[in-house]
Image (cartoon, rainbow, N blue to C red; front, side, top):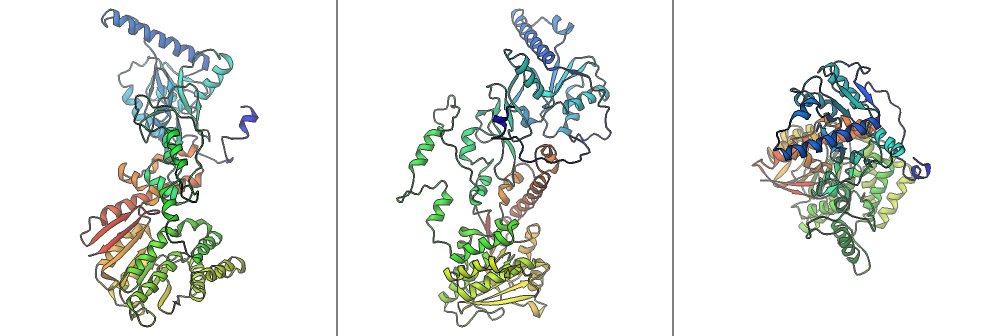
Length: 589
């Protein structure tokens, strides 16, 4: 590769050196002798063999057509080679050699059962040609065929498709490649286009395409075949769920202008990308603002976020950057405030304080509910009235949250409060761990607030439901917001609906993150996440990212099981909202 072409778009972002027990995980119980792996066939010889085999196949086909299909002598005397594509299904979908049979595996370790079934009736001296991307997997396959299945005429493409492509371009540039389409590669390029053939089928719409990509939602990162049109309309994501997650997180990729697209044959009803772009560019507001998504439009036509809340977001990014995405955000925060203001008394129980964004929203709404209902005095823990109780385990998060709520109590939600909150980033007062058991505030002379540090929030809720501990007895709440401990959500619901000590009859349980980064769609449609499906991604993904993705998918399974269980529970009514990362409103009957 010429350096002038390499520097602008290097195929790798970073270099990592790691010790691995295997270059490619094969799942074999005992290692094979990789030196005994058939004939290492040079690329030009491979090309000539396939070209000859194609000509013979065409000749045999013509001969059979002429004599009614009764000519078998040439096939029996000199059988055509069996060409096996040792790569996985996502690779073979966009490119393969002519005459090749893909193994159609999801993981390389699945190859052995497929090979035994495919070759069970094949003579042991039959010519078998194997290939892969770079010449590693086909060595293992050839060794397995030779040593475990006792085949005697096994060959493999030396250096894989990468070497074939390079050699043909350098030494026989006028030859028609026997490989058609795109060679999938494990780097930032995703694929090297060898011919113009489009063999892939778009994961989203079913059109033919040559493009392979990963879902733009970094918590999904699903590898897929997707056409240019769908890549643009779905913002590079694999599903509506992931698209919503990307839009709500503010990570929408820039649309490419003047993008060339492949016309859709025999489908005059399908919109062309460029026509849609013109419509998009023409649609704007009276002041010239152009909205790329409905979320942007909705946000722009909603009451502006309180200045203090914007500073809470900034402080969260500064003090707890790894959790900056966890704040409720303006749209969900506004909903929480509205729900609290519409409640009977403005009594809110929050499980998971974090840095206090949602707590502040609830406290604002609770104060409004108190004013609407004509509450007298400040709401309290056991005497009723507008009151917010927030439970949190993390002492540092509580330290940040308590600083925010103190600012809110002293200076309000407006510009004065925002100015004071911004000072926290300079004086370091937020850095202190919360070293007490609880702290209380009063907001607007009507709403009380208590932050309580707990080790196990579920145990605390269950104890409150029993009513046996006088230290943690509170008047019942109108709303319970569960934004923690995603693995035990059904246990929280059970504790809250078992009696009316914690949550009033007719009260709301709000459960956050019920769409779990859009991955619940995969959990629902594919029978759940299997960690073995990630083994191949170790070739192209950072280990930490891969671990993060595995955890996200496992939690998506748990979230899907919760969603499926709670909607069937006859003690509650459920409304799931596609807001941010998903919010379920569960009304206690």
